[in-house]
Image (cartoon, rainbow, N blue to C red):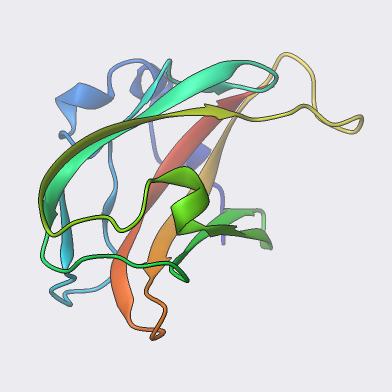
Length: 148
């Protein structure tokens, strides 16, 4: 996949609300996922490597999410993809009840020795929530800027 940096103007990093409340993210397909987001945001944005940040998300969940659910994060740049799988219930308290939700999760993105310096990179990103029965509960994709 080609990096999104060439597709978005530089002020995109700081003015995503002009796009929409999902910060440029969209459903991966036209499938009607049980988790429907009304808002999805990172504070501060862009995310700064080595600093704490919040992920804020609101919406409606049509099914209770139980132990065994996973979150799969995919980050692509210049044809290379990095995939990380997380235990849903280690990030959000389970069972995660059906109904309206308004959550903020504190996160930390550690720096690594081979990270670039003083650079913003926009990754093609996909977030998937998969239930313990392997059914897709949510899939969104879009640009994610990280400041190194």
